[in-house]
Length: 245
Length: 197
Image (cartoon, rainbow over all chains, first blue to last red; front, top):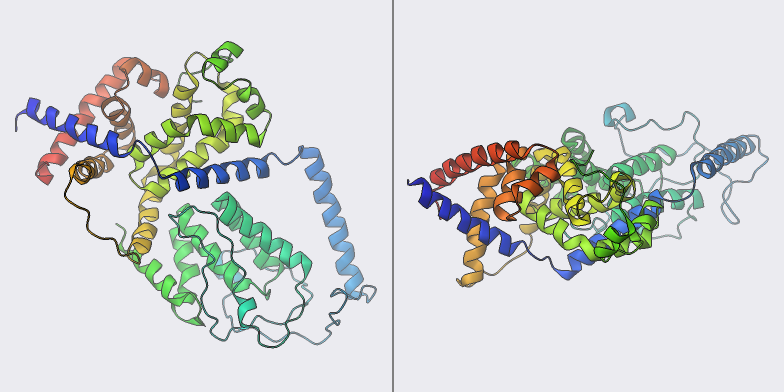
């Protein structure tokens, strides 16, 4: 082929690429703007000294609370949740924390909540389509399948979940979201939203390119170890990841 | 850090970009100011990102990352170039670090989601022909090393001068021309293998 002709054709291709990439849909533009502002607000949230002081306070208060709980000085569980003294039932999960690469749960973890219902909850959309950056928010799936009156959610658990949810779905800050999901799962290994947390963590792993860990995280869902919950999606994602060169 | 662009921005420079005191406020961590700066300049960053990465989700992530990094990055902006040129240099640096792996994996997600949506076949009009041609070049670009791809996008697709591209990349102008020469030669080979448009 003639080089000069090739150059003309290359320039034509370049013009086409220039034209089709000039604009993006307004919804995409505004969604990314929302992510940018949310990320900036989160990152710019106060001077480091204040953060350090807040962290120190949280550690002190957290330690005191655990001590008070185990010494019976604190009727943990809020206004209407009874103190549970019997060991909690074991949830149908066999995975060892070391295998998942997550931070292991604390050695002493007061069991404040019964295990989440595992009986094939109906899948609901909690992960915004990876390529649809609209900000969506969905209620945790487990809540929809509670048939009897569910026990109240520990506010600390709710806060941990909401934080991870915001990092994942609002800020789109995948590395921070992974850390937050890990923190949630470590603090509440039998938490009400643990399945969602695990699935969303897997998605965030995909987004950050940690494919091996993502596969490991998706496999239990794909194998049906949690019933139908996210089984189809996980299988499709694993297949899509495997198809990559 | 961001190419060769470094010099404290003067107020006049910034105002000439219709940015007013936005830069200073963004440097101070003002999220709303960052949003305003995004409103002014997202187009040029997004266009570059979409040309470079092909994958729209990855491009949006790059746009996000560029603007989120701005409060810190702007501290090294000294106003020798326009703010828009500086933004592209930030985008280039982020793109270099993202690598190809992330984009590929994101495409896996994209394919998965696309597979669930029925899309009617587009009518064979001029717009769809442009899309076809653009897709051919985008595929060929993906086969280039990132440094060469960046040069092709900046020089050939965006028609920037080699001086400006040298400024963005922080390399001598001769290096830009050399990279472009090799990149275009490789592109021609890839396009010939595909049978050209």
